[in-house]
Amino acid sequence: MIICNGVELAWSEGSVAELVVHLGFPQKGIALAINGEIVPRSAWAVTTLMAGSVVDVVTATAGG
Image 1: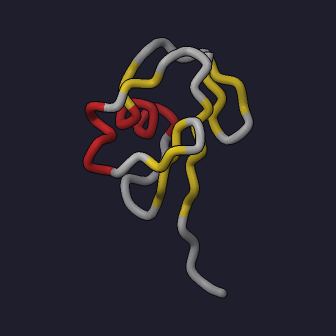
Image 2: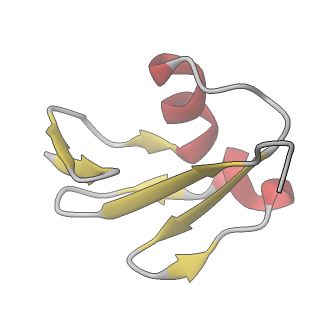
């Protein structure tokens, strides 16, 4: 299990990139943190999510 944006999800170990695709997030305009640490997009494919990870995905929006 992981927690993504406050929701508990059944997730076996996999990369951040796989999670983003699995959950249908856009490929651009998002930022991601694991356990409070920002993960650069360049590291998503090699960063593995472990059970108990807390993931926060933030989507950029236009406007002010």
